[in-house]
Length: 533
Ligand code: GLU
Image 1 (spheres, rainbow, N blue to C red):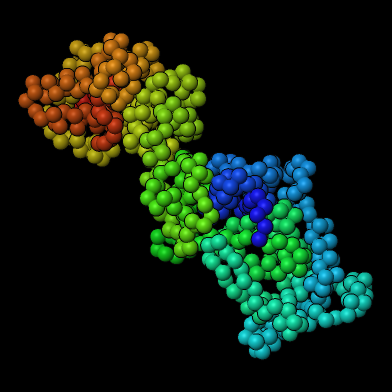
Image 2 (image 1 turned 135 degrees about the horizontal axis):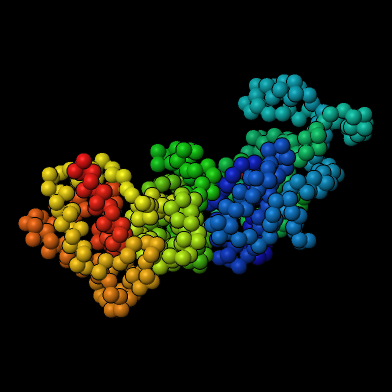
C-alpha cells in the first residue's frame, strides 16, 4: 500500500436531506483528513437525475456548513461547476462521458460486455442460477457473445446494458477477494456471490459502483470511509480498481447507528433531516460532539470536547466495531452543557433568531436592549438546552400580561389571604429602588450581570448602581413575611404565580429585578383583581 497523503471523500446523493448517519460519515472523513493533514473532498453522487434535487443539495451543503465541516474540494453552490481542479468535476452528473469511456476501456481489458437480455431472460436466468448454485443472479448468458456479433446488435439499435465481467474461477481467475477494512478487519468474500453487475443502463446512464470507483480513482482517494450498508459494494469496487490496474483505497465501514432498542435507527428517533436540529435550536457544537462519539471515543472517558480537540485526538484505527447507540437524551444533555459553557454574548446571538421568529422580540429591540436581553438569557441559561426553548421561557418578561397555568392558579388560590399578602408586597416595593420596566430601563439597571454573584466586585456593576439588587429585594420580602407572620414560601409562591403565570422558573428576585417596577405592580394588581372578582 502506498503512503500517499490522505484524500478522503464524503459522497452524498442529493436525493434527500442530510441525516444523522450521513452527517456522521462526513464528520469522520473530515476528522481523518484534518488529523492527518490530508484533503477532505465533497463529491455529489447525483447520477440519479430523476431523484436528485437542488433543494437536497443545498440542504446537504447547509448541513455541513452548520456543523463546521468545511471541505477542501467540492461544489460550493447548486449547479456550480467547481474551479478547474485536476481532480474534479465533483458532480457525477458532469462525468457521464468519462464513465462511458472507462466502460469501453474495460471492454478492451476483457472486463466489460454488452448484455442484450430482456427482463424475462434475466429473470429466467436468475431462477436457473438459484437452482444450480443457490444464488439467484444473472446467468452471464451474453458474456461470451462474440464481439462482432455484439457490435452488430448495438449498431442495429438493440437495447442493451453494459455489465462487469466478474473474474471466474473457471477462467483461472481468483475465487475470493479479501476486503481489508480498518474497522471490520479482513473480510473474505467468495466471488461466487458476485454477479456480472450492470455498469451502464440501456439509456446510457451509469450506476453507482461504476461511478463511485472511477471517481475515487480520478480523485486520488486513499481511504473510503462510509456507512456499513456499503460494505457489500466494496468487493465490486475492488474488482473494478484491479481491472483498471489502479491502487485500491483502504476501506473503513462505519457500524450502523442503532436506536436505544438495539435496532437500526428509525426515522422517528433521529430527525431525518439534520437541519431540523438547527431549526429547533440545537447548538451545532453539541451535535458535532455527540456524533463524534457515535463510533469513536476520545479517551474512553471524556465526553465533552470541541471539534478541534477531536481533530487532535482522532485516529482511524480507534473507530469502534459495534453499532453505536443514538441516545437522544444524551444529545440533549450535551446541548445543555454547551449552552452553559457559551459566553452569554454569543448565546444571545444564537437565541436572537428564535426570539424574532416567535415574535417575542424584534431584531432591533434586541439590539437596543442588548444588555437587558443578555441578563434575561443569563438568568435562564440553566433552564434550557436548546435555543428554540428560550422564547417560551422568557416571553412572560416582554408580555403585557400573563395567563396563569394550573399550578400558578393553585398557588394563587391556596390561601384566602393571598391577595392581602400580595398587596403588602406591592406596598413594600415603594420603599425599595426597583429598576424601571423594559423598554424604559436605564443602562445602569442592566450593568449588573444576573444571576447575582453575591460579590459586588465581580457582578458587573460594582457599587455603581443605585438600584436594589435581587438579594436586597429578597431580604425585603423575607422581612415582610416575618412581619406578616407567614412562612416565606407563603409569600413567594403566589408572587411567582402573579409575576410569571407559572409555578417554576428562574430565581424569583432576579425576575422581580428584570420585570421592573411598573410591570411588577401591574401584575400584582391583576392577580389581586382576579382573586377578588
Ligand atoms: N452516494 C452514496 C451514498 O450516498 C455514497 C456511498 C459511498 O460513500 O461510496 O450512500
